[in-house]
Image (cartoon, rainbow, N blue to C red; front, side, top):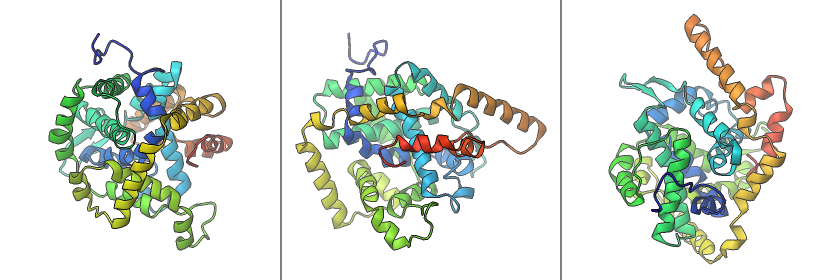
Length: 343
């Protein structure tokens, strides 16, 4: 059986994809994966119009707590596709349903919807590629067939939430990346906003009195990690579009991190992410069991339908923050408590 046979499960424990996502090095892909998905016109406008934290109307009022909870929600869903076991259908449903109402009009008057087949596939490509590139940079793929198996696994979990249309062979995907994905990527300001979060993180709501210079020093480890993770994989063409100029410190950091992970024995970090996620499943409250549950999303869909029909104010998007404001203040704290990055 060929390694790219999509009828064969290439996602579960023991699969190359599971191995790559389990390794601690995969965490370096967090910032580029967040950044890449907003570099399409539709992705950028969707965030600007609808995202509960990063949309233009909210950017002056959100705190780092808001952003980290938002980050954890996304981490839950993306990684949950691989590690959630018999709950993967609920995770996939949450991803798909959350984007049902991400629609509107681009600046040129063109209508957009997140479910557009090409946009949906382009967005998934922007998530899986930095994860694969990160592994290539820090660990290195064992063989070409192992890399193909990882990619096939990504195609399979993408199909769970109907992200389809990417090439089946990774060699063809690399052509797609260079000839389709990169030329379509651009920044309308949302990408710059996300990058700025890694250089000047939002101030905390719990201690607004902390001076900005002190906050910068306190958050340096986190900022350095996210920024270096992006520099490890970002293509030169995207760097240019985003106006990134590497400093000598950046170049040294990238070389140092790459060398460190190449020397670090794989067994030491091979189960970091999977172990964390299994603990979260057992003791935590993943987002698809709470504000992104079948019930919550169904209620949101009905409320959106009724609001559009009556012309009334649209209901707030489901979120951990909204759960807190709806008489369940413990849930956000419980969600945040399970995250290794203080999300």
